[in-house]
Image 1: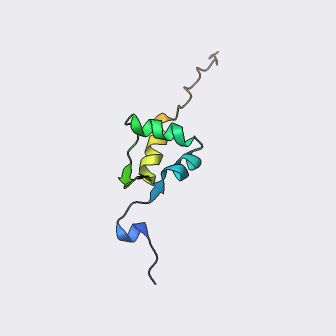
Image 2 (image 1 turned 30 degrees about the horizontal axis):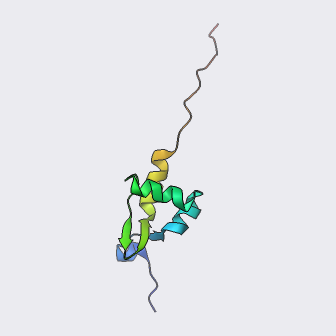
Image 3 (image 1 turned 120 degrees about the horizontal axis):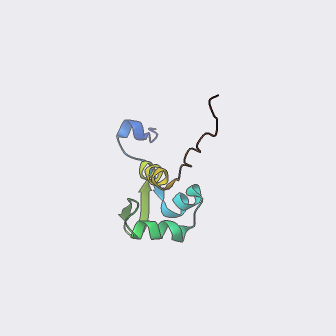
Length: 77
């Protein structure tokens, strides 16, 4: 029996909306609001909403705030 391997089939890994929200650590409603606002790509299959795993990672990286480097107080004597 053949097992699904996205690398061999060329298909992207898909994640259901509730699973995606749980994996991201946000509420289902928060993820839905991001989707409806057009901030994150999705696929609708009937009434179900799926996300491509790579799109979730890209969205998470876009919204992640990197702290700005703090100026050094070192003086050269």
